[in-house]
Amino acid sequence: MMNSKLLRLLFAGWALMSAGILWAEGLPVTSKVVRDNCGSCHEADAQQRLSRISYARKTPEGWEETVKRMERIHGVQLSPTEAREIVQYLSDHQGLTASELDKISYALEQRDEPEQVPNEAVKAACATCHSYAKIAAQRRTKEEWFKLKDFLMAMFPTMVYQHRRIDWGATADQALAFFAEQFPLESPEWQKEKDQPAPGDATWLVVGSQRGKGEYVGTVTTKSLPDGARQVQTAITFADGSKTTGSGTGRWYGGYSWRGSSQWQDGKKAREVFHLSADGKIVKGRWFVFDHPEIGGDEVRYRVDGQPQIVAVFPKAIKRGAQNVQLKIYGANLPANAQVILGDGVKVVKVSESAADHITVQASVLPDSKIGRRDVTAGNALGKDLLGVYESVDYVRVFPDQAMARIGGDRIAKKFTQFEAHAFSNGADGKAGTPDDLDLGPVKATWQLSEESASPDDTDVKYVGNVDQNGLFTPAVEGPNPERFRSTNNAGDVWVEAKYAASPNAKPLTGRAFLLVSVPLYRQSLIP
Image 1 (cartoon, rainbow, N blue to C red):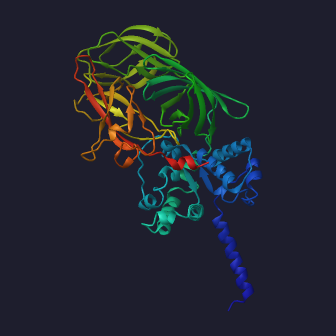
Image 2 (spheres, rainbow, N blue to C red; image 1 turned 180 degrees about the vertical axis):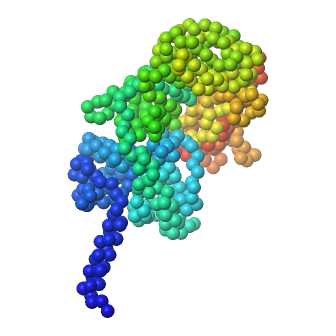
C-alpha cells in the first residue's frame, strides 16, 4: 500500500500535468495598457496569458461591451484613450476572421434578418433573450463556454424562473456543449486568416443602395491619422444624377472589421460597419443613421488598384426596341476613347462622354434582342452582368418583404421602416419568381396601408401609423390609446402596399409587404 507522501507527490504531478493540458490553449497578451489595467484581477502566467481574457475572441462590439461591463460592475477606471486602446488591441489580436464574421455580419450591421437557430437547446435556453448571432460572434475555450452558465445565473437570477417551462440548467449545459464544439477558441479559419493586416490607405469604388433614394456609385478614400484612425472622404452619385459628399473617421479592427462615423452634406450623421473579404479585395457592409439604425444603405466597395474596372451601369436595364437611351457606365481607370460593347443586340449609337471614372453613351436595342443580362466592356475593362434587356414590367416587389417597426416618441425613439418598390421582368422564361427574373431597379410608386385581418373587427390600420409617398413608415406613439378597445396601445400588423404603372396607359401593378408594428424595446433603454 502506498504511503501518504507518495500519494501526495503522485497527485501533485497529476494536477500539474492536468493544468498543463488545460492551459495549453490561450493567446498571449503583450499590450502594456491591457496588462496594466486588467492584470490586477486577471492573473498572468509564464506565457503572458491573462486569466479569462486570453481564452476568448470577440468582435470589436463584443470587446467594447466587456470593457463597459468592467467599468460598470467592477469599478474599473479607464480614460477614453485607454478604453479605446484596449478594445483596439484585443480586436486586433483576439478578434474574428473574415470567414467567421461573414456568418454573423448581418447582426453587427444592424440588419433586420430572420435567424435560423441550429440547435434546440440553444433556441430554448439562449435565443429567448438575445440573438443567436450575439453568441456566434465570439470564440472561447470549452472551460470558458461553461463559465457562462454561472455568470448568467449570478447576473440574472430570475432567469431560471422565467424559463420555468424547462430545466434551464440542464438545457444550458447542452447549449454550451454545442457552442464549445462549434465555436472553439482556435478554429481552422483562425489559423488560416489571423495574420491578415489591415488594408493600407486606398481609394475604393462604391456600389450601394439606399432605400427611399435609390442606387448609387462613388468613391471612398482613406488617409491614415497619427493616432491610427483613418480620415475618410466619400463622394457618391445616385442613379437619378443627384450627388452628395461626406467626411468622417474610422478604424480597422483585426484586419477585417471597419468601424467608422461620417457626416453627410445634408447634416445627417451615420455609423459605418463594414467587413473585408478573406481575399482582401472587397468590403461589404452597411452605414446607418446614429439614432435610427433601421435607416441606412448597403454598400460593396472595390479597391482601386490601377487596373481598369467597371462596377455599375445606370439605368441597369433597358427595354427591347428602345432607341437612343442614355447609359452611364461607372468605374475606375477606364481607358480613353475605348470601344464600348454592351452585348448582343444592344448597339452603341454615340459616346458622348469619356472619362477615367465614367463613360456616357447613347444606346439602342434591337426589337428581337435576347432578354437577359449582359456584360459591359470598355476596352479591357469588364463589368459582368451589369446591363439587362427586358420585354415588359411584369410585377412589383416591395423590399423588405417583411419588417418590424416600433411605436415610440415618448420615452423611447420610434423605430421606422423604409420600404422601396422594385419593378421586375419575368425574364426569358416568361414566369414570375424564377432565377432569370430581372430586377429593373427602384420605381416611384404610390403607397398605402391595408388591414391584415386577424379577426373580423381588426382595425390596426387606423392606429399603427402611416406610410408616406416615399415609402417611409412612421409608427404611432407608444402608451395606452383610449380610442382602442380596452385602451390597448398602437401596436398591430398591416400590409404595406405599393402601386406602380410602367406607363400612363398601363394597368397599375401592386406589390406588398407584411409589417408588424410592435412595442418599444424598453430593455435597450435601461442598459447604461
